[in-house]
Image (tube, rainbow, N blue to C red):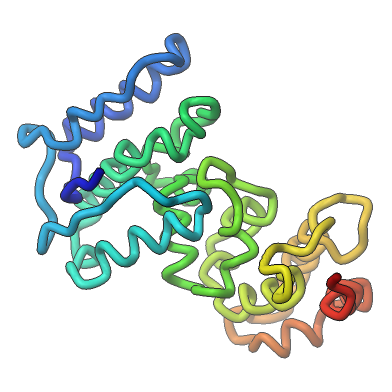
Length: 241
């Protein structure tokens, strides 16, 4: 089923937020999909692109579907309020997908866009799209999971805006933790007890940020600065079965 993408008005955003909050006491409520086409609480966006729900199983596929739909519409030129309304509209449109058919809700900012960066970066729809738009294939480590999940790698990188926007850093993360043969993240990249995991990388970045301009570093320079504990992940590139 396809729909023409629209943007919620302020009232539409408020009604969607009210629905999300109501789920805490009544998690079996049916999503108000009728809001998607309600002219009193939605506005059109340029060139009226359409989008479909079917055939999506990963955050990458979700991001690609949205990117292909709005790429030539000028949607990025919408005002902040209009963009906020569009992302919330898309959140409702994909609601069953991003909640695993209403089995996984979590905090409201996963569905309703916040203007606070730490919360905004957890919005399941916009954050997936932005990761794909900004980093393309180098975002594979954080996008090859289910649309309703955050994921530790995702949350660690999204939690800091300067890391999230850093193209060289994402390329370094991809080269460390992505298995090009199996087309999936390498196993074991998140546990605390292992050397060179994503948690260790974020801790190291917090230290390097005091000395280096991380945005000025190239992908190669990132790799040179990493201690030997990270070499094990590069070695795994030659151990795929």
